[in-house]
Length: 157
Image 1 (tube, rainbow, N blue to C red):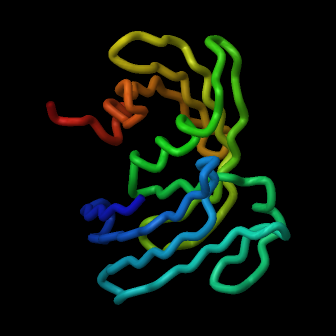
Image 2: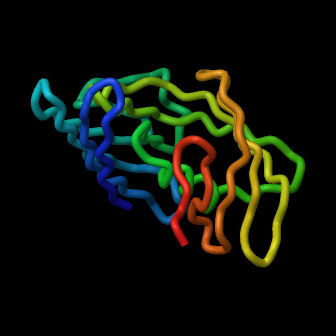
Image 3: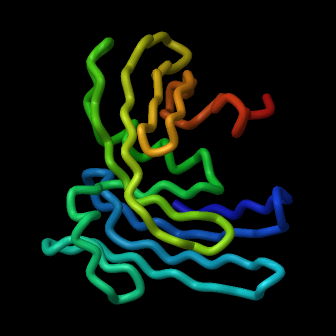
C-alpha cells in the first residue's frame, strides 16, 4: 500500500509512504518521508518477532501493534478492516503505530473499532481513540476501502 498526502494546516507538509503487509494483513515494514518548510525527513519502521524498530531503534511499547496509522491518511484504516473478523456490536481493540505528519514522530495509538452495520454496499464502524479522545462513524465500501471519515476524508463519487 502506498500513498501521498499534502496539506496546509498550521504549516504546509507533504507525506509519502509505503506500507508492506504480510498475507495476514499485518504491517511488516514502512518507508515514509515528509517535506515541510524545515526540510525533508525520512522514516523506516520494521516489525519482526521481537517487535518494532523505528529507524533501527527498538520500541518495546509498540510490540503488540499490527497496524501502522498515518495521521495524514484515512486509507491506513483499511488494513485492520481486512485482517480482523469483526462481529456486529463487538468492540475490538486495535492498537497501532501512529506516525505524525509534520515531523514523522512515532507513538502508540490506542483505538477501537466496533462493526455496526453490514450491507451489500459496505460496512459501518464506530471508531474511537482514547489517545485522542475522538469518536466517529466510519463508512467503508464492499471492498473495505474508506468512503467517509467525518471531518477527515470523504470519497468523491
